[in-house]
Length: 68
Image (cartoon, rainbow, N blue to C red; front, side, top):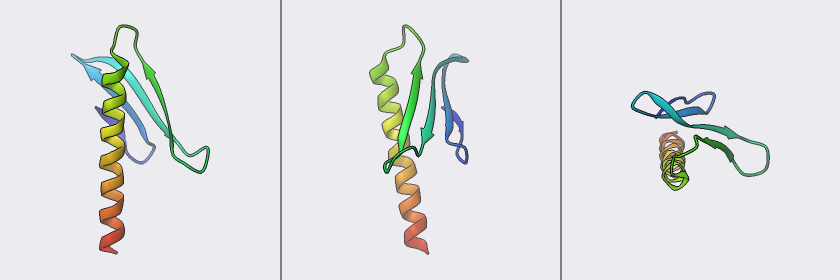
């Protein structure tokens, strides 16, 4: 997974080929992800990756908040 943490834009690649693109948006009270999955790629695998990314970002934010 490659991405820009400040812009919240990510790309998942397999063997150098893009298989998904993820954008995090703040359109509502809750964070929202837009996910585009390439045909033939298992969407559950991509959704799992997005959930792992969101968890990692939330843990990082909590740690920063706890540290002051």
